[in-house]
Image (cartoon, rainbow, N blue to C red):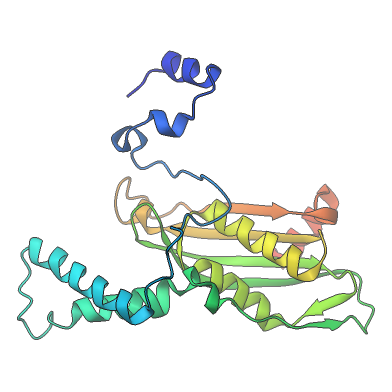
Length: 234
């Protein structure tokens, strides 16, 4: 592992610290390299069916390497099931075609206080170990003249959760998407989640949880943050 003096020297010389570390040196630390999910330029040249076929073949190889008997009745369908699960379900948020279609409505009630949709349950996957992140998202906004259907808030959370994720990125992606859709800076997102890469492996701490937040516009004041937490904890 590089010592602190060498890391400081790299930093002062303008080097990208992530590129100076090996996978072993990074270890279990969660890196957050940007708001956008890292994707290849040709990510959608293959059809979903082509991807499923390739993933099934590759996963069968993984099972074979581990010594599992793929002729067993219980296991022989597993590669295909995993491939369908990856493309159609738990990583479906990678495909922009699955992005929720959102319609806005005039705020005819003239409601100008915060609206909070709390305890949105989501399941995501850690991009470092491909094991689940299980949590709840709390989303709030103050209307700038338009309102969004409540179920669409849930769908936006689910869309960004259904991809390999880092919790910090997930939080920002939801917040920035809502700001764009609602045409307002007044958006807040709080995520409280458990990471199975922490609880089921590695340090094996089953009691800790991770909380991340996104505060925009009017939510960037202690008073509004406290009001939001009062709603969430009520």
